[in-house]
Image (cartoon, rainbow over all chains, first blue to last red; front, top):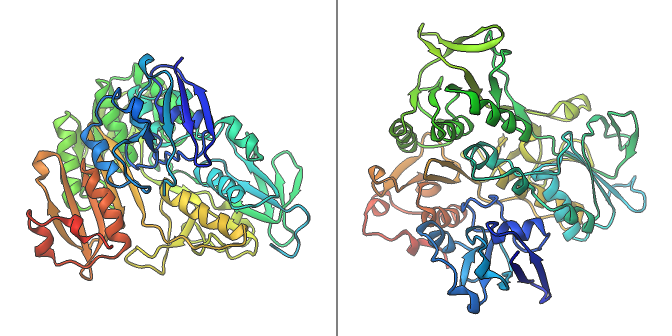
Length: 107
Length: 416
């Protein structure tokens, strides 16, 4: 199982193991990682599961699709080049060790 | 805090879905340090409902992925979730409630987050085997199982639930007919432009949509549904019926306690009901909404956003730093590959500006009221939706012909 390291708002890191195929958002919710709201439950409608992907891993992700790219225009926290919606990042073996930074706010 | 409060104070929440969970979580986050009990009438941990009519029926979502929060969340936040436990009576004057098992609980704050239930089909045959409604996880699992054996389904009601079920089941190869009483689909929630698009979308997926059609009776053989008879006389053969004809608020506890109700438990923008110390949030609450065409009339909106935002407002009250709910309403629907997103509340008398070509499957409808953007409804244009929420919040003024110009960029309207 790939391990994801969530860097929380308070600077602490929470590491969780999540099965391949699960989204980073689902892994966060099911492991009680604070700061990822996911109001729409992961169907790319709300942009409240916004995260910053650590640059070392960002390039390994498939490009965001048009829907995600458009939703990223509306995130509540600062949008950065490494901004993604965590509901759209599916875990694969190569993402083991993925570092995710939780943004300051989702609303 | 109420004058009756003991130490530590107790927040009792009746209902364990979006509103109840959000209230519990936000009250804790805001510093409420008392006891929080949340009573649910289902055996499950609180779960996500939108996928029940979407991903769960199409196989994209599994039951395990539906948890709204992990079990650890409730433990860490000291939220006592009591499953399978109905509250049978509330006494606002005595600040007590009675549970179905006969025990009683004293509370300082009581929040009614009792939700709504599916309106029952009124016609003969509604009790036949094969007639389904969809609200709960158990409803969805039953429908999913029935759809495995079903071939022809009749969906009664062309609202969001009915149409999402129609899309999901058509995608599974069932022959689907949607019967709608009104003259167009989704008439309460969207503009005619969106209704037309949705109707064409379903037609393109071989779903038959019958508007202006009333159901006379549901017929069956040996206790199982076999056909839906319309008032026109037409008989639609089917082995599955899904009713999506709206919901009624679960306001019985409030009514019995003498709390003011009008199509829901009437509250202010902090969730306060007519009884001191008693709050109502979520689908059961009717709350004046500053973004509605009639902002002073209590309005019951069935959406996750309203459930969350009114719950946050109620939590701020409980924590002693009241911040009224003024959020722009938004909601969404996924049907086939189309993403419908609505920001703000449209009114039938709004002026309408369409941007983009509906035939392309990607367009936006701007609703103008008194010269200001009151609602934005989009099909597969999430950027316009996110922009729309800001423009509606700011009540942005714009001339219709300016907005209608394809070369005009509405992003320039964002208030700085």
